Amino acid sequence: GDSLPVANVAYSDIRGTTDGCDVAKLGAGTGAGAVDPDSFMGRLRARTGLLDFDLPTEGQWEYACRAGTDVETYTVGGEAKSLSDICWHKDNSGGVFKGVGGRLANDWGFYDMIGNVWEFCRDRVAEGKGINGAGSDDWGADSVTDPIRAISGGKCPTRGGSFEGGANRCRSAIRGGNTAATSPGAAIGFRVGFMGL
Image (cartoon, rainbow, N blue to C red; front, side, top):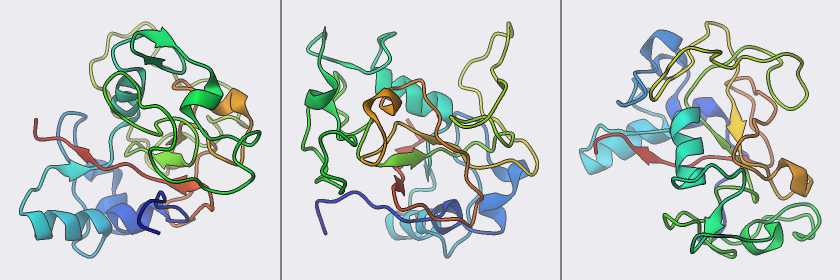
């Protein structure tokens, strides 16, 4: 429906199976990467004439979710709110998607950054580094600005939690299970980013 989030899509549907899945062509965090012309992003770029649409990187996604704060969920009007006020999760969704914008937006006006559907990010990350994986792939002590991970053979990360998962997974700092590029997920969607600002 027009008000529901896009879900049950694969990373390759969004960016393509050739250029869109080539880690060497993901682009820098501040710019859009290469996509296949017949992918969603390829068609969006052709229709609008704007080549700067792409999935956000994990860093960009988390920055937008936090809206300039350091909290793990997000604030509304500078105040932390309960998860039931800001997202759909297993305990309040009835086990189904909900309309976009049915909960409060964060301080930058973004709805549904957490909950409702997991959202793909552009990066490609090491296998097993999500909620069910062991170990860490953080940046360590290195100083980074707008980073993008481009691990050859890596999986496609998702962020933010979903209507199927517990409230503990609805936060800015969580990465969902990493997904193969051609595998859709019933509770996985995406958010379009514009890299040309």
